[in-house]
Length: 328
Image (cartoon, rainbow, N blue to C red):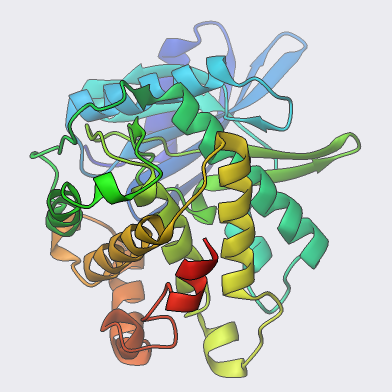
């Protein structure tokens, strides 16, 4: 599916909302999609919506993403964790629409030039752990179900990790089976501070058909924190206003508390293996197909300035250290 210009998107949405005034306020290209924000007015009532068009998709994947969004939205139990309200999907066009959520992408709070206060960051990480625990509770598969891969997905590194992990799960304490969120990073979380407190909204739900243990999502969050540390403010200026290991330990502790899990050394080592799979995946841009300019620029930057990190030779390459694993 190709992107639409503002006029085309306005006409498309007007067909969904007959009799309403529609204005396309903005369109932004992202790594895997185009994002449109629109204002819809009917009489004295108005609302803002977001329409996402996927770059590379199969209709069944768009359907799965929309159904996952809807399931999480309906299953949210608390007022502090939610998702945008889903509105409609058009799988043949790669389109998903939802209500607009006012807030800030959590990764912006972690960038070092103008980071949020450490108290805000800690609170957001606590909510992130609770959100993943809630997601895994809603998308849990029967215990003992075999791991399953989505063979249609160009995810060689992840599939290889999951195949290799089959023989290691019995040594772990965390053996539950879940449909992984797959891209559980701070880029897919919106945080908003209201007078009543902080809220966290999950976005970009999974479209792939996998069943595995929670280690994959836990590793993805760790990978995302490491990636932020590769960006210029932390990479070149030496700024370090939050500690990566401490923040991830806080996240793991919060997740375990919410899920009544107690990780052992085998669990941490499996998370470490999944983290390495995500690093190998980051170096393979060919799997993405049409991905826009952002991933290409990001990969070129990482290849030049973060080669050691990609090659597992950086400061975090031996995570988890033995002492850290023994603490579990």
